[in-house]
Length: 332
Ligand SMILES: Nc1nc2c(ncn2[C@@H]2O[C@H](COP(=O)(O)OP(=O)(O)OP(=O)(O)O)[C@@H](O)[C@H]2O)c(=O)[nH]1
Ligand SMILES: [Mg+2]
Image (cartoon, rainbow, N blue to C red; front, top):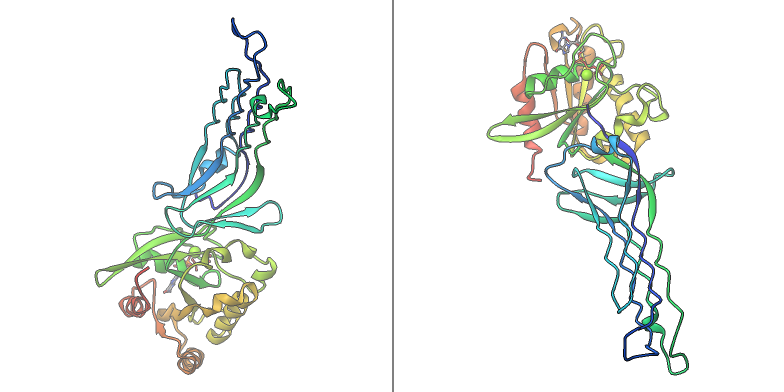
């Protein structure tokens, strides 16, 4: 199962209380204060690590509580520090506040660490409070409370390119032909419900391409699958627009492109600052009158957008398409 979102509570450990204690030794009848400090509460830390690919673990455990610090004790003994909890998340995870979803931290690459909830400091024992006027202080401090926070963890796929298209355009068919991914393909809209990633190889290079659910007009307002899926292409460098150019398409190719472009712009205008290419698919079923396809091609030429006609089903022009795609490629 592909899990890309989880709501989780984290509570760091409380600091241990400082101790109130006085020396009691045989030959020291009125011993001074010797209460030690409380230990620190355990922190909760997240780390983006290569071993972790999804947020599945957080689906089964939605609450994490770190250990409290131990109490200080007599003879100036400090309480034990509570153990930290270190949790792994995949690179591409963002942490947001719950429920207003403000960004707290972005694990934009491997090896990043973030202390999500800090353990409370231990309280000081009475040994610290001795003064010239108070030789036998009864004062000690309580340990601080550990931080507690409820957050949204969200995994954004880090694919190099994302396939965007209306439902049924042939996105899943395409990724199944250019990579080893085996997504569900069917002749009805919204076959794809969660993104599929595929590794595409070409000329000894490879890149990750994401097949996402189809985008409908009104998607940015929550139509169809709503915003759920647009999230997944926020991080790609390239957007591949898949346009159904067959005679059975309900929309003219250029109109089709404009609907998609408009939805992306409404969702987040920066999406359109990515590099894009346009792929007219199902060319094996192109209408006899090619004027609709030509209109899209001319439009792309004017805007200097690479354009290619393919048949994902028949495998036509897939190398040509990959060649264009890899011409965008730069090391990441
Ligand atoms: N003739 C023809 N049919 C195609 C081509 N590409 C895809 N199809 C068919 O179009 C239908 C939809 O294909 P999918 O790959 O599931 O489309 P999708 O864009 O992933 O659809 P959603 O996941 O629902 O958004 C299937 O019946 C495919 O066989 C093509 O190049 N030519
Ligand atoms: Mg699909």
